[in-house]
Image 1 (cartoon, rainbow, N blue to C red):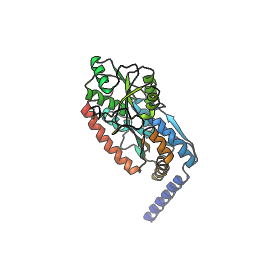
Image 2: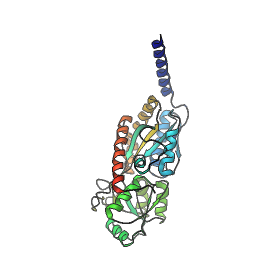
Image 3: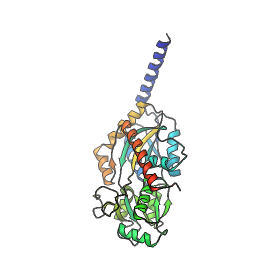
Image 4: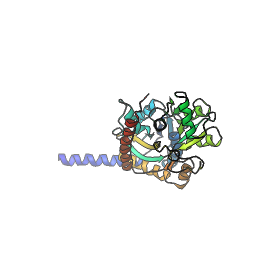
Length: 320
């Protein structure tokens, strides 16, 4: 009798969960971006949000929560009610931070339900036009001539931009001053205003300023020259193959979100990530669209945690 009762309860729970996923969503969904507007995370979230809303019949509202090396916004995702009405965009800082910080407000492997890997991207080394360096080699010479005087801005401690610049510093053997920001948007604004000398950033956030001669591109982390910047060499071409950090972006939900809801979110997001019109738009900004299964994203995150842990240990990078 007890066994039959337990079986009935399980069947009812399964039916309720299936019904919840079928009805989902019945109200707006919040998409947390743990950075200020304007960077890669924000751009991709705003590309996907209206398309998901059109498919699912409810608004997907982008909510920028910058600060704490992305941990403020990411912590909000982890602590949200696991019902599918709060999801978020993570990036490379998600798998870098555990190697940099002894204490974190969440566990990257236990507190999230990965939805899909959205995209990856190369990075571009740029300087403000006032910097008298026309190449990466000249920038290294300048930094060596003025140790501790050349400033580099990052999207925050522990971001791919920060680690890529640390790689550059180590490979080039130069002393630079790190200026962290609360995202790619504020960083690029200060770069083009001349408040910092250099940075490394995504094509999505930098191409328009490079084309307008408000930033000068010197090298990229891409495996081959970017179609949009055929005259800009790769770091391998300029003799710095060790500068190879590149960011990724993915969507996650809080751990405990019903599997059926995660599956529905995954199906909708992957459909649009793989859609020809969005892939073309992403390619224009040098994003490499992915769109994979939750299980594949879990494996990717685990592998990246190990990779960045080694890079951080080898570079001696510290959270500032």
